[in-house]
Amino acid sequence: MKNAVVLLSGGLDSATVLAMAVADGWRCHALSIDYGQRHRVELEAAARVARALGAIEHRVVPIDLRVFGGSALTDDSIAVPMSATPGIPITYVPARNTIFLALALAYAEVTASDAIFTGANAVDYSGYPDCRPEFLAAFEKLANLATRRAVEGEPIEVKAPIVRMTKADIVRRGHELGVDFALTVSCYNADAEGRACGQCDSCRFRREGFAGAGLPDPTRYRR
Ligand code: ZN
Image 1 (cartoon, rainbow, N blue to C red):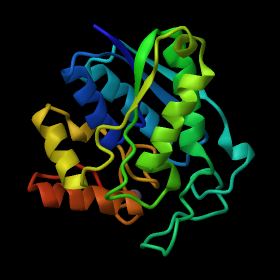
Image 2: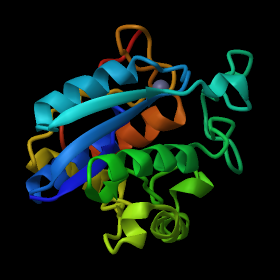
Image 3: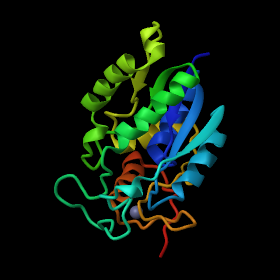
Image 4: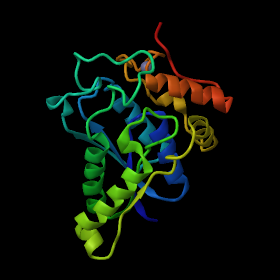
């Protein structure tokens, strides 16, 4: 069995990716980042998901992106928009996936992993530039220039198995693989118990995904 690092946010997409990687026979080292996110409760969800889906370990790296702010997710003075906004929304966290993939790359070298899995999606998404396939391809190129492992002949692949799937397809695929979506938290405004606002971008994509898949939505919404 080959080792892989799986970036796990605690949301629906990365849970499905973890289930896909486990089903394909990878020994999965799950990695979550405690970056000062507003919806920090997602980290508890990530721990539940890692356990439920059979990750062989789950690490959480603290790295406080509130030092920079610049996003509704890392600055309490910026509100999460409650309806769609034009352009790249203020929930974009500057360079987040570059930072996360860099941490995953370090973990991949230590765990002798052949792949890094990310739940990035460029279909039903908020237009974040660091979720696009061309970004992920560029990062893979970087990974294979940057590491001892790669220079010594063991390349690292960046795998984004859901990057071109619709949210409904992701929900369907996760459901087939037995993902308990009730364990996951997607909402940017989730309360301390993990209950969703039902109005942010992330809640909207998630709700439409369950509706499109024709599956019951187990999300707990607050009143
Ligand atoms: Zn929400």
